[in-house]
Length: 407
Image 1: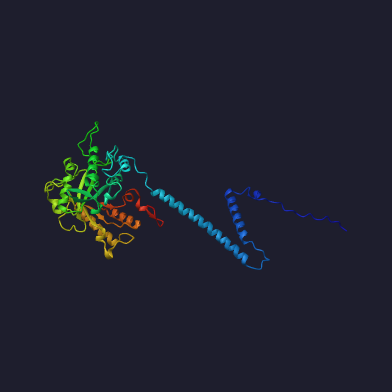
Image 2: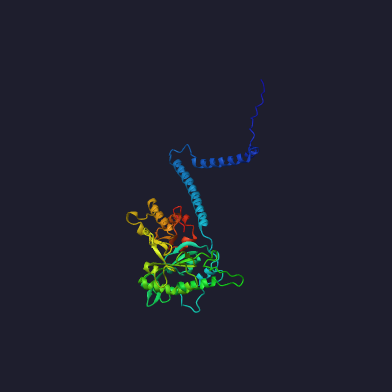
């Protein structure tokens, strides 16, 4: 009988993960670890005991798995959305305003006549780093700081509603708004006189015969001072012209000399009750000299009445042009409306006039900014706005994105 030695069981060598991965490239190691983690996660949810008779534990585990995955995806989406939103806000947020004489005046401004001595209307480096913009400050006297708020933002057109009461010109929208401290002189003419006087003082180093305007970066760029006459036109315009006489004598007003326009730092435009006849002929206007210009009707330029010799702006309420079935929608101007506006703007330009639409949509903000952009693209001469900070400092082409109004 043979004695056979019991066969030894062959023991498989234990191979660790480290041993397996020693020769594996790093990228494959990472993929392996990711697959292993995913496998463990699935098993933790898919584990089932064959002895379980009810299917509900398995269903509950699957539901929990789906909820966990959904929650993770939602958190990731939320983070990405808000990261993009914050990046966009940083992208369109305007830089800090420049520090110059204008910003200092705005910060310290008080109502005329309330303190003695009155705060200055001009300070050194008056409009440094301010870029002039073809924007009209509608109802400018409603600003916290009339005139200076607009100038600090580079706005080149301001508007004052003038009421002639007992020989004085008061500024306000309606008669009930008038106050003794808020006159055409105190809010506009006196500050402009101080500004232009100081802008044209010889510095002792170099002098020039050129008359400097408000803007340091472009001293030949003028501003438009529009008077919207609320009381009887002939008498009110005569009072405005009389108060402008000191500026006229210094050569600060743009005028027509009978053959051409001679530009000055200030262009005076009359609107509201301003009589066209008085613009053409008065104590201050005739065929060889005219320093007041009319606000011609933008929707009625078919005649040969209005041209650069007697008018500057050519304006109309946009709601007059587009009313009833042509009313502006929340999406802005339609193709048909754009064609009408383009023809009016081109007609005004051909006559040497500056086109302007007022009464633009104010709300919602997305509609307002869309119409601004559309008019700018059409080449409108002056963009009439109420929200001057938004119009001048924000990139309003990007203000309405991701379903949010960011400006």
